[in-house]
Image 1 (tube, rainbow, N blue to C red):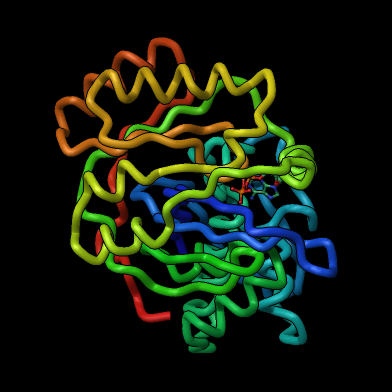
Image 2: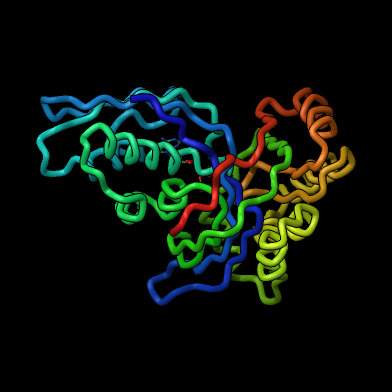
Length: 286
Ligand code: ATP
């Protein structure tokens, strides 16, 4: 079975504080986009698990999130899985590539085995693999809270063109969390305003509220991210932000031709630059 592991963007990302067990409480408006990895999954009768991860630097064993998901789903069945990933989503970009692969494997195995778990049940299994996996199972537009696994479906992001670029550097997620903890005063995204704008189908209202608290603690990388955001805004983006813990940055465009021009111009500077849209048909019940 061949499925697409759609990438995600964090339209807004807020860190509310730390829980007793050391985890951070997040509040993020998440959006699935219409591009991602192609994942092929076959059942194996001998119970073996294998993966071609699509890039030589990605784990080709049980550390790969796609294999973790397969092992969890098939536990106790005696069956295994052979997985092959055609990688398109940039790695360590904040676009949830690994989580999306895991979610795609869960959905594919649910169909291949005929087990018939609901999306909610698959999302609950996915939470054991990683906190972005439940959203990647559900897809669409959602408010993610807790560690990211508590989901509330939102009105879909109005259709628009999206340009995403990943600078050549990656950012250490634990380092960003540590820096966020040390900060005294902190700006927060206007999450309530973004939810109202989504409800009203107001693309410009959503776009101007795109904001990621991690951008405030990027240190020497901040200039690169700000420059990329400015380049997108100068070319007509209604709103821009870094996604997740970076380093990819996106811009939302009302005009397809502005987005195309921006994508063409930025592709000359950034090797990993994509033109996409929100995944249609989002906003499933959660
Ligand atoms: P998120 O936005 O969910 O934080 P990300 O986009 O920053 O994710 P990924 O590209 O999903 O990051 O994964 C980063 C790490 O996960 C890498 O260190 C990689 O080795 C590991 N990993 C495990 N499985 C996969 C996979 N199937 N695809 C990509 N990375 C994977």
